Image (cartoon, rainbow, N blue to C red; front, side):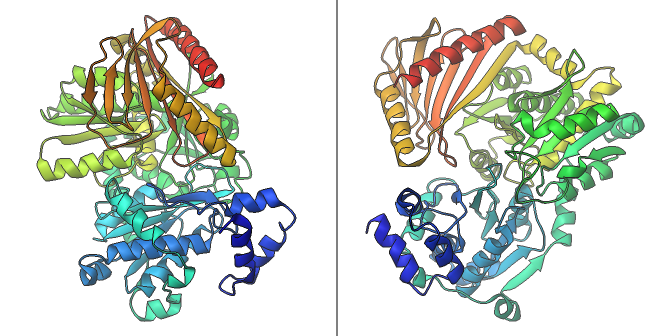
Length: 578
């Protein structure tokens, strides 16, 4: 069936409501728009669904949510059906358009299949959902969010019984069940009120919130210093119109911070994200209002969480007194060093401790792990792989999880959650800044001290957005070219090794020797260069982008900046010629 046939089917089928049909009639003269909406199904990928909100098979709407949830329900009921029905599924949602509605659509489908559901009564951070799965003993969790995507998007993420996003091969098994749903009439539904009467739908909130906040606070290390510095330490915080407001403000207050100023224009949930073009703490532009407020109050630190409060951006004053955004790598190494050094000082650093990072995260983590004589483990991009390791450690006892982070502003201390948590990271970043202030230093000076200790590591991320059908083809051609014809040298540096995670093979380009990569398959190419430099390329799993990651190690800051700039220029030039 081509896209026009599908379009007409939606217009004619009485399964679809009048609001949906009106939206589709309004685009009747725009064939390209119809094609974009119907040329494929919105794919239920390894992270669930994510797409532009709207009517159509390739859009995020209540019908795509229903289909995905019926597939999940079928998967849940494949084995131990009665037990899993009783365990149930917990559902959370963020501040985006239709998030609450989609959450209850998902609940109606699960309830229609006899599966108990727990739905949060208000906006809830993704990491709290991760925590709640295990806290409530559920078989799975769902969170309705598109994280830091633009306002046009929404999404649907699935969590396993361990509280982590579903890893391979289970993700593929769920995808297979979703793909079996070929007709929306296969979806079973139970109305909300009937589900409540049947005891299948429970609204939750305060008890889970309290238990979650207690676990976050337990990760604090230097409560005495927080209290000592509280009167003279000022924090500016922005939730960027998302879910972070209540939990972040609460946890900062309860650990002892007194002067926490929230950006008033951005404190309330707003699906339009009206004060920012892109609600992403990775984007310095998102912090304009926060910086203005911080200057007025001479703040020591600025923190900003994304809409579902799993990522946090940190800004500190540099040597010139200007507020600068720390990269995810910078914040990650600062927190890693802080947590490990504190454990070492207290004599609680375990011999089998492990620090975990993703393959595209700074190599400084390797130097830190070596300094503290602990294991560094690398996983594929995506925090679910860090969550998977925590579960593995619990089962085998091989390692004790100490900290995990990724360059894209995701961090987790503690094992109460199995996903990145901006609430705990916000608390620890403020705590660390207070610890440095007690020493007469800024957090920026603390970072410089790390560079002096471990070397001047610098990283960068570049993205090329390639939308639609043509964009997908272009992304594929870039990956194919680099996979089959890797460059011999880049920016004057020899390419020593190509790690092809799709083929699960690392090839030494000097000797042609090959070695197996023991990680799941993923369409990622990683190039190891001489002099501790590297670059990596992968298509985004959630956006129409191809992402390029770069890393270098220099003799000093200026040298590192120069090396990085040269590397980016040469690689991007090569990619643009493909």
